[in-house]
Length: 298
Image (tube, rainbow, N blue to C red):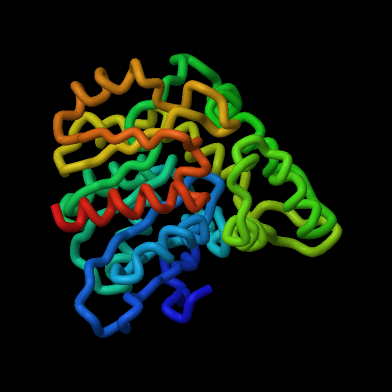
């Protein structure tokens, strides 16, 4: 990790959040824009390592959301409203009034709820393959929603691994990373492990993931926030999904209707990537960094 990176622990209801902070490379006292980064449903703040390398002149603030990473023992309910409230505590702790918020996957839904419930804290939104309604059939039971949206991603949370090499081997076989393995990805995955050998496991708490997945797919707060969306926002989609399959989470034919219902949202598709590699690959980080730079000056 670079010398500009540090972590802080921010008190929230039920415990404290571990928060990664990348200061501008010129130093923490330099005037620089600050961007809040919100990760996906089973991820951590380390999913932004590659992006941070590409934004050396931007202050980046990225929490491990409750139930994930080194915030995985925070007690109490989850859901988009709880995460949004936690993000306000993070912004207060780092002394930022309002800023651009970037959310990947579930992080996009958290960002939209933050903008709705705390509109003065958000200037604009960048929604990376998340944040607008997913194409999930109505009437599914909670476990069916989880299986439909996450599939093997959820099943991994019940698995144990004897050592780091076994966990890396699990991910090396994952179709999403067939062409995008990197040392940064290995660092992100190593951070994800908790426990002791031979019973290492992913840090994300299954119950928290389940509560969040159900909430983002039809929960009152995210649906209200999407309907009320009034901040400038950029929706960034990719053509492939969590297993590198087509279509991705936002099939091309659905996007026009989503944009028609959300007039403050613009759209960009980044080709050649899947849901994971949009943030966890060199190619994805290049594309996202360019879009964030445009957002900050525009």
